[in-house]
Length: 157
Length: 353
Image (cartoon, rainbow over all chains, first blue to last red; front, side, top):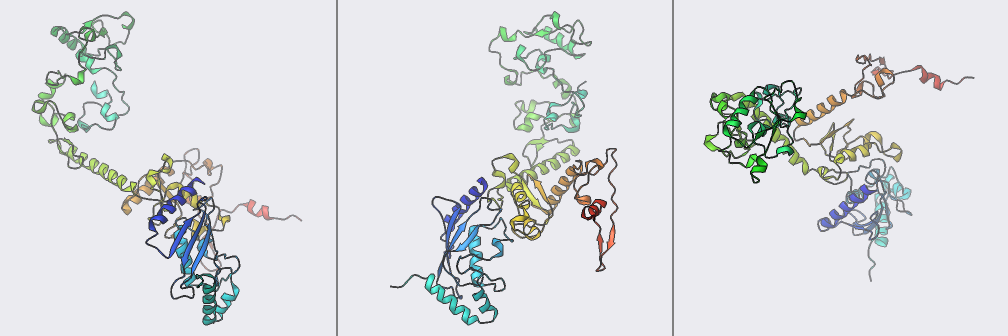
């Protein structure tokens, strides 16, 4: 408990120092609870998520960093490895391949990488996975872009 | 007699004289607890001195005479209760009581006296020696000898490593020994300085700035060179596999490079070369190898680590365990080493109908 708190404070300090450098990721800690974080990440360019801003919610366990944080999308996203309803993310480093050397910041980077390189063979969103597996890249891209416009972009006018 | 007395400087690990020291460098010898200032007749601590105020052995008679000739302030009284100090103590050897403190209340302590006037008992002997046999001056080595050119001891040359004047000009073997030792010490200090900066990637703290001494240790991985605290890396590796993490690809792997390491070596210092790492690993294994394995329990138990165990597998009579590995041909044609097979393994699975 004490160790995880100390480590999270270190990360918070690091995030506040680095904010200017990495403007694709904006990590914010809950004012009253250091175990609750939210992040805003920009959709990677040259993907259907480009231009969108996605919100992530982190729930950090007390055993952190020996146990991975639980992360889910708060913003709706059409992606083979993200659950369409709950926002749960299927990513090995958040499950069985976690390493205590990862930080919340690097988890965000991993999620951005996952958005750019979906893994259709272990889908949480079967519709999206099936589109990709059947080779309908165009169908997947247009669906993903539509949901990005609907949910992840500021409404115009 | 002094050869049989343990050197005080040696006992603190700081004797500069090495083999040439007139005192013993053998731990078996007893340390001398006799006050040297008292032997010269002046000890400003008087009865509060932590050393014994007795005159000992053959030198005592001459020194007593000199004191009396000089008309020193020490007055000889006999103390009936202490007359039976030892067989060596003869009638002439009575207990001296200092009256100096009474007669001159502001008598400076012995170490504050102007050293030029001070009467060192070994000055005459030392002055007549050949240069090779003259001991090195420890005042000069420490930085400043108050007696300067008049010092009967040899003033050493400057050691480039420790920057002390402690190299004996006429004893080449001693110089060499000192240079080697000094070099090693400096290397160790440099390594320690370098180690201060190193952070653990798990807790993100500097390893050597941790609050408790037990935590201020590195945990070295056998197969890669990424630094961690010993507690962090051990906690991570002992993380229960039920938490969903893969044992071999995550828990036993380096958190940074994911290289699989089978053991962690504790070390208070971080290495900069592979030789240094090897030395740390070898020392660690040698230390564990001298400890009896509690699983093996002198042959009464069985150790799950078998021949890979770092601890000592010896029977009570000192014999080491001898293991004959059983090689079995596997189905695919490879040879495998059979694990310990016991009859109980079969019996526990056996179902009696």
